[in-house]
Image 1 (cartoon, each protein chain N blue to C red):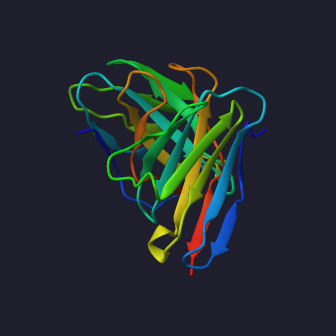
Image 2: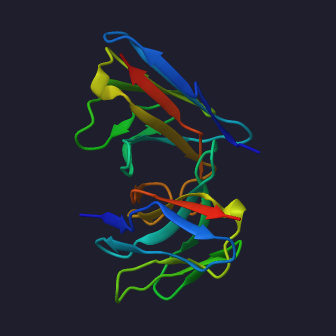
Length: 113
Length: 116
């Protein structure tokens, strides 16, 4: 079946530290891959996405590359800020579009000044 | 600002009662909305796809008589948890897309349901 596994949290970093949140997936076919972010008190927001192998999604300094050979979509940011504190969800879409999503469990990130 | 509004943000009810949760798309029409459920420290689980003007499509293992979905207009979908029990306590989230395929989903802020 389709599933997403992402690293357990919580993750606590100091400002300007490097961030990596690992995400691997299992899927039939060629899913699209997403990272969603949920800031405190808000709904999930799309952070970035990639629709095919070797695509790199990027937004707000975050990046993730669709690696088919390792079935991974790790999220990275070179220098985190306090405002990046949120819960991050890795997800895949198994119907080609962005509607039917399978989510990972979420990783809570706290960035301290 | 938010483009999908979900109400209420939290609700506490007694066992045996029913609870209705609303999901509205604020500045676009959504022929399809999605309802998710999230248990503590677990991922969001898709419960059902809500289609305007037709019956909802439920995921395997989700009781359709327990979780009634009504999508009566292009901007409103409701989820009613009928005869709620403590095990129904969870975080319920809706989402909607402007168009089918290749449109980003917009999520509501979620509803925390506690059944006592």
